[in-house]
Length: 206
Image 1 (cartoon, helix red, strand yellow):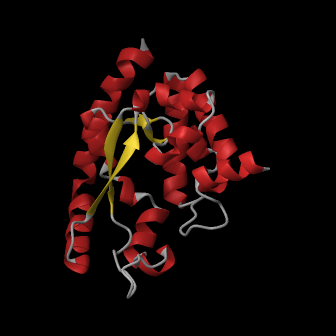
Image 2 (spheres, helix red, strand yellow; image 1 turned 60 degrees about the vertical axis):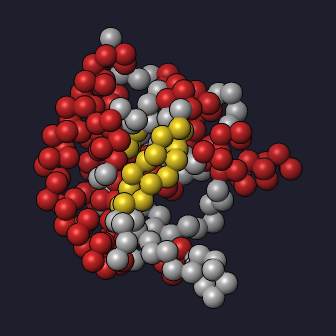
């Protein structure tokens, strides 16, 4: 009952209320990025959703599009803005995803939607993460956010799918709010963790 009907109703109502409450912050960030970068402040990227249906996720831009003399994008560390670092730390760059939830592409709680080109590298068990709508936050995020390994992330995603309930969603939501306020478990720049496709290729070679 909750998974098939009530979850979507709560997603829509809470996201609509949340977006209205956060609209002043949304407008301030939108205006600031527009004035500073002279570009669209929103970042769109294709991601797989429920049933691996492709949709476009929305986020605030946290990096510029600066390139070197050969037309190649500069490293992330050189393109991320001061505002971008702040937004990532407190997850403000994800406010536009409330629109994705209102549209039905996403849920408030669920496995995070990852890159489309990762699809061929999941195991059958890991693919179960795509049997529900992806979320703005999820069990993997409150269990370590960006600080846990790929295998640990997917274990948590599958655990969530297998135990999906109102109480679990409520627990994850409360834990998310606490982590966002503290700005904890965030890796602002790409560290030693490899992209998932490269990580899985390395596993296959060993």
